[in-house]
Image 1 (spheres, rainbow, N blue to C red):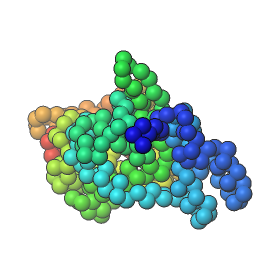
Image 2: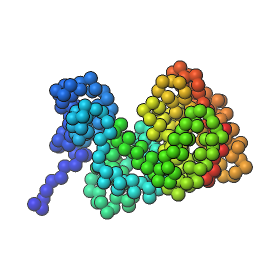
Image 3: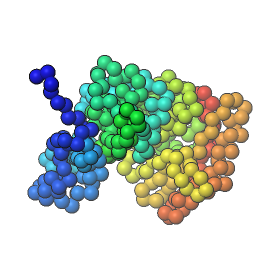
Image 4: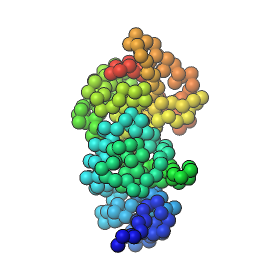
Length: 315
């Protein structure tokens, strides 16, 4: 037994046995009368790439057909707790990349199939390889760079995206409580800018200790406050619209209201008012709202927000 071969999710051989194949899912859905939910099932539980094979999460598929309901069945609580503690203590770079993953972007990582539990928090690569091997991420593609395998990683599906969003919400709730976040979301969509500014400052005062005070912090901070607005809203970050890229967009699915947020970071308090106004003008000058107008949204709210340390000014 001293020469055992190990085949991981990165190997082609036996890759089809890690979960359900698309054709197997089709048969299951037809047999259990859920064929009409195929697209939703795919969005929620598909997305894994094991050795070049498309794989569905078998646990979640079985739960969904058993209960006749598409829902969040990510039950690996112990793994979630471990990952949550690791990410809380990680650098601002990791938190910025987590933000990128949540908005559908891909990150590049050196792959290591031999990750040891005791070394998980030791480096960026260890953290992401742990997330890959435990199902939080999947490989878009693999390339060779010299002697190393390089993986392009992403969040595989909606179910895992919900797991990340729940994790972020718990971070903030530990410090702030859920009610204050809900009040901020409500005030933002009602264009009560003074209340938005007051709540942002309060939440930053309570939560900043979770993160490094880096320039990229504020973007991820606000995104973390907004990601759980519910299925009726779309929250996007760093997307093209008009003549540039807005920092953040919140859009109600029924097209009744939308919001564009532009952020500025300053080093002096006395410049915060000016930079918040500049951010607001940038939205208008670059016409970041055009995409919303094309969708028929007429109630478009615009926010210029300047940050400095634990302070925010909203225009």
